[in-house]
Image 1 (cartoon, rainbow, N blue to C red):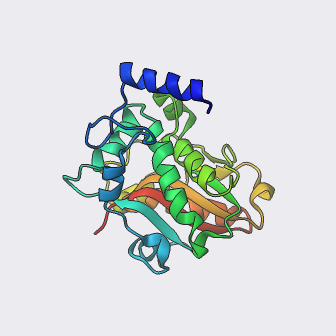
Image 2: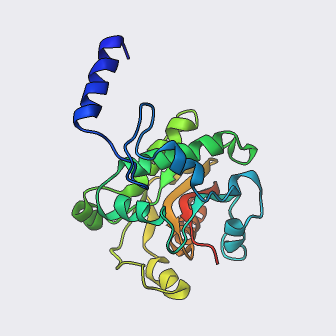
Length: 234
């Protein structure tokens, strides 16, 4: 950006200041969506540094995955918890992209994710995506790709074939029953031999990601790792 562009951006910020989506304070130059102070205070999991972490163990005995991680813990009363609600229901998609970038920074320095070939956002059913206007996981995937050497984001190959009700108030077994047969792969050859990074916003029971991974593994010869913005610790 040239000098004129910098001046224009500064003037726009004075008239229409941006605010941190966590603390509400004005963002300064170089900050975007979340201020540096809040990023520092974020309750990060650090799951990307080690195998056999708490999130990865959640899937043991259920589905074969390579690795699993989330950026931060999803805790009751946390100032960071509303971020996911704003992303999912308020249309503030920049939260997904910005947090995806932050997670991508972590994964790009981790040997565990160095051989990922493509990023696949968990799909919404077409009806739900039309009603909402977007799929929040798409924006998370875009942010991850931007910081992971532009690994391709592959949308519309893994699809959700059946409309299901919200998972919010369901237990693990009910969640699994709700999504166990609702995904399909349109072109299995496109995923053959690839290490796929499956991406979602928050991991509660892991039922949706388990169903996605099972569909992918049954459809083609591939490897699966999982990444999310937030993880509900037990």
